Image 1 (cartoon, one colour):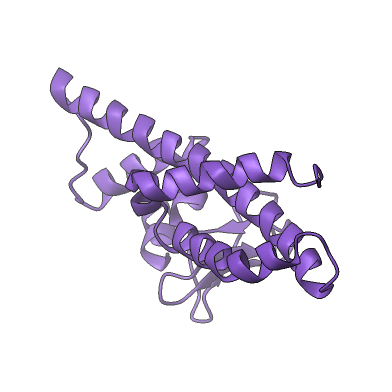
Image 2 (cartoon, one colour):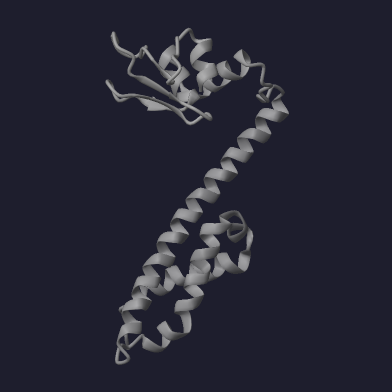
Length: 177
């Protein structure tokens, strides 16, 4: 962060403090933290990392700021140039969004079922007590897998089918016969 501050013309003193460029500063109030930990202004409350600094300083979005920083410090940036690279990047983004949507949905379903099972598990007289005893650990396992490796769960047809069964089971939970 100190290299970025110096690159953009800030004069950082020995304590890592300088005038804040984000407001009319007369006394140094912008702290540049060592070991690339970022910056914070104790007067205006602005803070963040190198990319946030450049984005705010140059009025750019984060992507543009990251590209500018990479160019300024000679770091190669792999921006898709050919049609094929752009298409592959778009497909990767689309796949990531799809997995994220599924993960959010599946996590909601599993947590809801887990809550229902916990309630049933507390009372041996509950109509779903046996189901709770059988499935509680399995649902906790599925939740853990989903949190640790959502991509793997998404690709596992058996796990997807089981989570679909959970969603169906939730809708029929109160249909006790």
